[in-house]
Length: 216
Image (tube, rainbow, N blue to C red):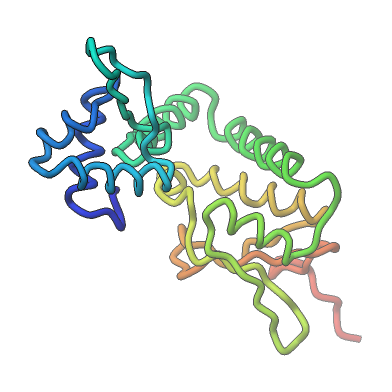
């Protein structure tokens, strides 16, 4: 959670977490067992990174003390249980409304998300870019046949989708709505694939169940 931060900076952030009203340089120096100069240097670096901000001043009878506190970004470094809440909510919703309605909700959410990203249809490269911004490691793969696929090497909803595969419908609706085309989910990590592969198409692709014309 504190990637790239030294031990003293981690301890400083933890100290401020327990003092939401803020702490002075003197208080931080005493708490951390370092000099005031060292505290100033660490605060300067943490302020630069947006993790700490200046709070109110505290009257002392002499010169007011400047207090420092965690910023909203700094608080986000500490563990959250968003995953637990999402699991509970999806599980409760699935139990209340059933499979078909959950699928519809996921598709509606995917379309709404697409509408918030783009006002017109976009190409595969732009779709992959949106997926990357959302947390996917996605790219376009071009085959020698001229066919292209969007390949995602991770799934940002994998844990949720493992329990509720209906979640995949959100991705499909998002990609399809951004492109204004149909989407074929060729490979899926939930079905044992190593990646998720998506192909856009305009016509209904043939399936193994389609009747073949009789030989003349």
